Image (cartoon, rainbow, N blue to C red; front, side, top):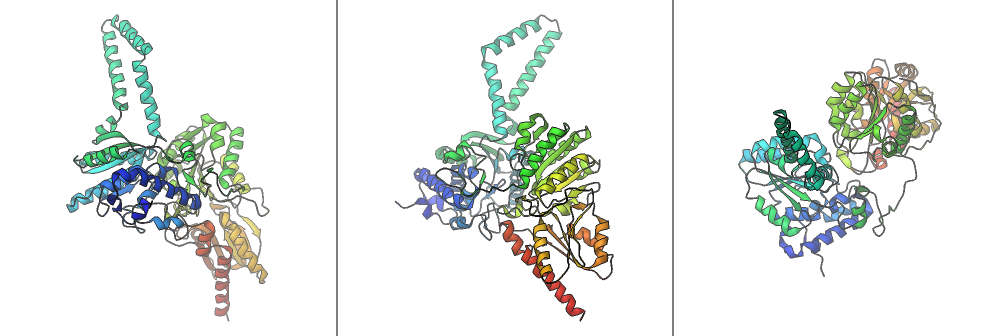
Length: 626
């Protein structure tokens, strides 16, 4: 029997397939996802859960003009399959391959680039307003998961969209992995209480007692009724969205084609904003992902039969070092508090959460809130550590400045995934944090070159005053070189003294800088190698020492050059006469997906690339000097 999936090669091809055959097509799509993601890695559970929903949307829409905005984009693989990109899955999330997120430059059917959470409703509303201004009639749909509904931006957009009275459909994909499960549990609990005989008896008893109290009793009775009705009003499914101005529809079974298609077609007749509540099962169709959806949220290559990873990294990561150090420091200091923004496991805080549950707080996908929340904790005498990916900390820039740095509060930012993160590509590369943090007063910024140095820096940060940021990458934290155990505030580490040439390295770029220095030494040069350690405050004394001895100074960082660590050094070096300066880092662009090693090589930031660039500058200098 021919595969139905073979007949889908472009947008709207799904319309050629009878709805009665949709279950078969859904099974083929799930098989396709498993076959490919098991080889390349990617976001599995979220995509398995939205197969039927995506198919129904494509069937009831005209993708040549209608637009779908996928929140975050973790669940957009089926959309890519149905818009003619099946072949690209062989190179999913690989260098120069198919992106793991919606990407307009990749396909016109990706209407908006996503990768961060809670943005879809805002973007879709903007598109809907633009449509109205143009006088066209395309349908605009935002698909947002319940996890993304923990982000405040989603509610700002809902509030705006509800008042707009424009035609827009928001599909709330409720896989019960986040707030919907919590709200549902409260709602069910209160409903159970209302119908339980014990509750009814207690309620009657309260009323009898209140009735015996003249005047006041009657007032209290009415007040309690109003409070009870208000709670019920808020918790009843859909009421909140109706109050915001949406037409609420649902909940609908997200795996039932007939129900989905009927509802989506009927919604076309409704004027104004509509919210469709769809219940789905994350990981559906693959039992391992159904049982452990978060373990299969983002996966590497794995064995389909047993669900086990095909390759295991036995080396210790920076996240692991951070997490273990937090537990040790937590035992020593009862004021230490840990905060996560829905990234507990990713940032290595699992053990801290288990060991100190009362001192651990996961605030959901709400980085702005997390920073100001941490500021409030710090203002009350505790020491909060906010563990967050570099790319997500960008969302809280104003709060870092106004709520933390301006008040000089002792908040520690543990910035994970700094630098290149790899397969997630442009939206996740942490190559901007030095640039956006280095100009903030009162903020100390450190970058460890190893796991041991991270441990020492974190201990130092806890003992300090004022705001501190420690940036470290998504990579192994193996110690390859001897290291000076002591981390002295504001002091760099001169690993190798030398003359004429100096290479100043930031963080884990040390391994590449050292490789280049070793090659230069083999050719008879005597280069100095400096582990800068503190991006802010800079060790001016060490920089001046290097400037007095060297004619060529080079900096190396895994950040964009514009406004980065090199810029900070250059501001000091430029005052010195006769010094040739060059900063090595990423160019002024968004960096594509690929492994750290591939991208460092592509942009000349690996040992060979640095050596070749430095050697070229040195040879050019010799030619000019005769």
